[in-house]
Length: 394
Ligand SMILES: Cc1ncc(COP(=O)(O)O)c(C=O)c1O
Image (cartoon, rainbow, N blue to C red; front, side, top):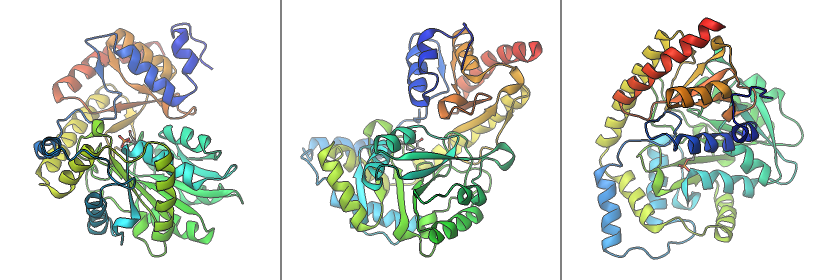
């Protein structure tokens, strides 16, 4: 695997597990007070004031008793209305479960959906929390390659080629963590045809749906004819409203699937935190200006990062959505896990190696834009000599 002695043993020990590698690197970063963390996936921006006010008000009024396991009826209704209005679904409150973040949602989906040996098709590179969710439900992950030349869009032919008699579901994350790519509407239409032909389920993770750039627009596969009854949509409040620490998300699916999920949820965490659910309701029903401002800020930061990477002659995939620049680091001649460690140790910049999103990605870095413009510029200044030195030696 990674032979280089520059990487300490504790990093090497977790290098083949994407999720553990990310946590290990974050732990190391905490040792350096001056580090700039471009690894994070949780927005650095302040939660909008009206959402904080709603949480405060819920506390003041002691609206803190347990909600039903599926979530507060008011919030389930507001989520269903949002899905009808913005995503073209026909969801009602009973099609919605409120979860403790999208993270719990994806775990509960797999626990509810999979029987031992069931296969889930997962585009690679990937958000590796899905690996653990699938495996802990006894399922098997089957990787679907995506590539740089195609801006990490998902190819319908690749999906169809991976189908076996054990295939249960196709996972689609658009926009994508880690690549910032999207699955375009034309491809989603073709994938929907395949999914219907083989009688499969789609898990559609749309948690970054509000962050698309240039002229790209989000499209929900569940809105296509014949798809809503076979689509499980995952979303949440963390990214859209900078509410990561509130831990509130949601899943929409056919009623019988939601009822089955509620049973699993009741047996694990019970309902999502009530105060967070009231805050989520304010997020969905409040003013849209704060979100517009977030979008403006991320667009500006993305431009700074793209310009900086071009100056360093680092190639990156077209960042059509989300918060990430999926950057090809192979011109440095060193493996991304090692490069990431050196950038942290020498440059005090945390950037996750591609290997934390799948073992095939030792030539990539995922750079997130979740810091102020000043810190992004500072991080670029720190990276530049390190990258230049390795490129020169290569
Ligand atoms: C693709 C994707 N899905 C789901 C999640 C879960 O987010 P949360 O639990 O904060 O809602 C994340 C978080 O990074 C993510 O990147």
